Image (cartoon, rainbow, N blue to C red; front, side, top):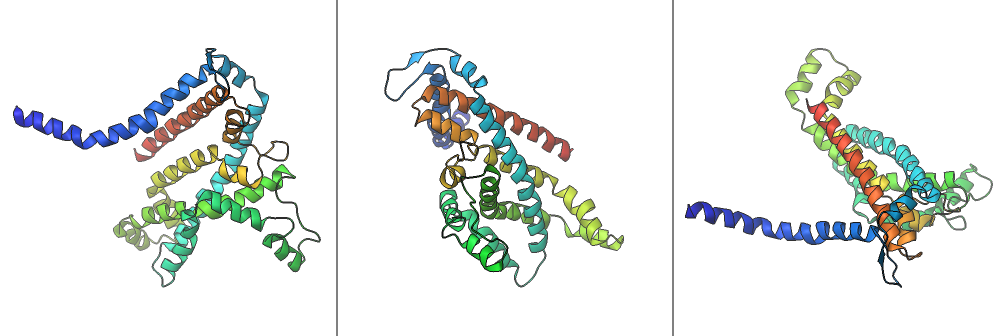
Length: 292
């Protein structure tokens, strides 16, 4: 009995730091945000309780749903590029070769760069006056005058930002896919060769089904990251033109700090969090079905 109690207290002692971390940095902030969402909370005035008025206002806020719609469009645009591009790069770099390590390193290096730093880099590259991209296109004769990439047209700005994000993130998916591909037992690939399967058949009927769990994982991470996009849009366009490139998180930021409406910003954050949670649950269900 004493040994059992000792083991129990020992186990609690081991998990106590993790529990404290979760309580301090997850449970308490979440509870605080829920409490704030029920108040009219400003940085310059005393908060007062208003119940669900912030949520009623959010569901009727056309600007919020415009930013949410733009975020979904951005997510739908960039997620297939990250998944398909990362998988193709993994197929190219997974087989043994002399330049494999160098190729993987070159593709993966942008992942370790901070998103803010990479956004500033691409902001400079896409600059109208002194950007390298305009200079190259002018020298090649592709364009006759510099293109206004950022802040003038929402479509052009979205393309420029998506390009910077693909450069920054695609290596992460590639590494995960390479690990999944290399985890496939060699007996399976060898038996497919004995059966006369060509390269395309091996990829579509052997490799892809056996790595589907990783594909769903990378899809989940990509969608969550896209729904929470903020840094690249804040740095490269600041929501321009006329907030047409303002994402949901950017809209939450505007209401919480420049507009000093912390309670309303908390309510918007909860709506976004519930949306991401719902997508995560759907993704987990699909993952379990793929495993079965």
